[in-house]
Length: 173
Image 1 (cartoon, rainbow, N blue to C red):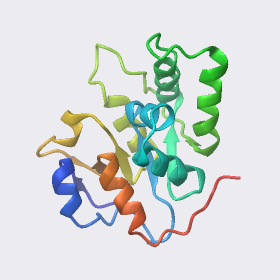
Image 2: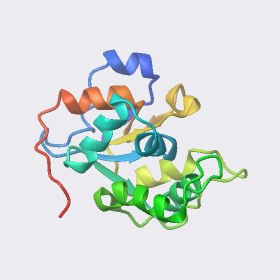
Image 3: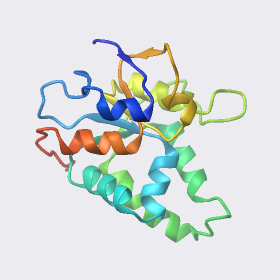
């Protein structure tokens, strides 16, 4: 698989879409979406959030998660500042989990202070052979000289890529 340079959000808008994003041009890309982006899509409104939810619901992308990233998502939704009841948390998870591919990623632990924040998402992307990692993490988006076998994009460039690609949606059954 060719290597793709990690790029910043501004340059991603003008860069050609890496060939690793769509292996045959029509299948939905496998994508790791970091917790902050998922929580924003589930909790906060806005057109980008709605477009991302539509993309995963209708099979235009294949979001992936593993045990560690699921735990991180559950902990994020349980934060006191959101004030969600357990039932509300389950309802929000129900908007995402049925559309996500479950990936075995042994050795991947939920984010904590002893490791770089985004490491579990990068490890999941590697284990699941992701085409794209969608992140709101500025350090990951602006990393220079880092090569990964998948594209790293902010949400808006990812949504533009989906819009401009000849993807045949394939919802999970």
